[in-house]
Length: 149
Image 1 (cartoon, rainbow, N blue to C red):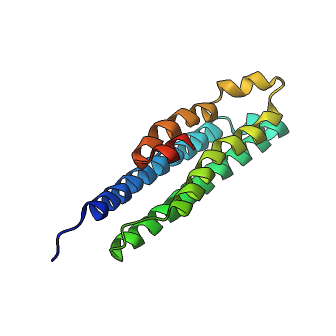
Image 2 (cartoon, rainbow, N blue to C red):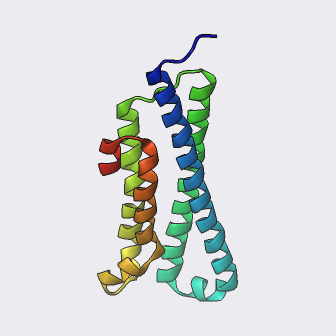
């Protein structure tokens, strides 16, 4: 077995950290889905009787499920790359994934904003704080440009 070059070792480390990021994000969105489902079960009458709250709940619940499925599919893709022993990810694919990942909270905040009377209330939601988690996790990409993007 030949020794890996520096570039191959760096690519392997980037792939390992990308898998870690995917697992963390899957866990966050899965936890959000479970908490939201528990909230729904405890407040089922209040949610079903208020159309605005019901629509907001359904959208955010569907969004969380979509984010979990997206994360699992991304992790599956990363695992298939590992099995092929092709350690490098293209920069275009990484930019596209970073863009989609950054747009998740933006879309969620945009659609939730219809349920608030004042737009400043959006800044008090847990969705807004998801940006900080994404910024912190972006350092695991080991690429300054992608973290700034």
